[in-house]
Image 1 (tube, rainbow, N blue to C red):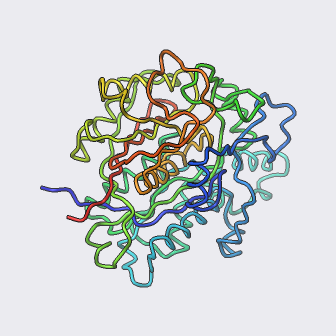
Image 2: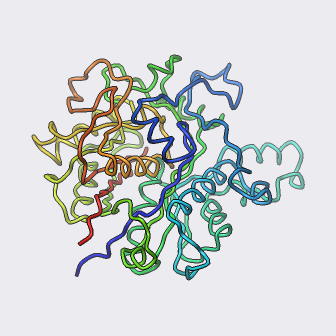
Image 3: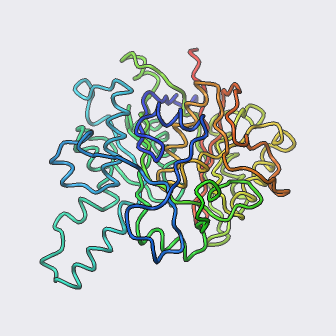
Length: 411
């Protein structure tokens, strides 16, 4: 039985490189760097000085003031990106059956803000805790506020699988639609990682680069890479069935053709290339395609020693000798690591790569690493026709998700 075809009809982003898909895309293909000194808190005592912050974001530009007052920064990113995506898709909720429109968002909410409320509790007592603590900062309310704002009454859930969350949300939405649970799902990821707790914890783990120069801090696949840089933002995509999109005359951007998952069951922090390869193969099988059809790989590419070497190895496991002929690049070299939002924003970039025939570069690449010997599109964008894109997301702890995005061709 053929699978239901699921199409991407709208996209929206809030990122360190801009607050629209077009601005993000131009920044990516121009090789612009969204990484700079942390400005959101005093970093004098922190070993890590850099992040990829969202700049000049005014939530009231996108969200009614009443909703702004009841939400935190993470939810505000998601609501703003959702508004853009709905406008992009020309989706009119007044014409939709609300029970057939869902929302699935990869996010961990705002744990730093929850921790701050714990301090309020200790210092000032239980009657001083913010009464809207869960509504503002809880992960479940990120999709909840989107559903409330637009009146979507279909499946509504949050997904938290660390760095895989955004891709997971898209893959889960894909299968919800295939199973007939919804005609349209608003899916993606949102994250606010540039916080005192987030930076301190990841720095103590040894995952973050302590390089003070923004032009050297995040260099995926380079021999001298020394950790990732946290970023923040949101990416939202509108997914719908082919039948629904055709009926309402939607402009189709691409097809979300497949998703594959695996779990390392190996180590809390170190990746496992063999299991990453399993996720890629599962995605290819789900999309009813083969490794020979892959034109480009949007890599997880975090700029850590272990991740980039493992991902390179996993690509070789799946593609064999053909791996050396497939362009690979990492958006994180410019965006930083958006964690729960990474896979969703990178999915937007994958769609734009397919539509424009340009592969964004991996910037800051200077010194080849013998263990990372693929074509990483160093420093400058490259014109290259892409019909099928494989996107990887690998979460800290061993969660792996790969997505297949494909050029839509009317049959």
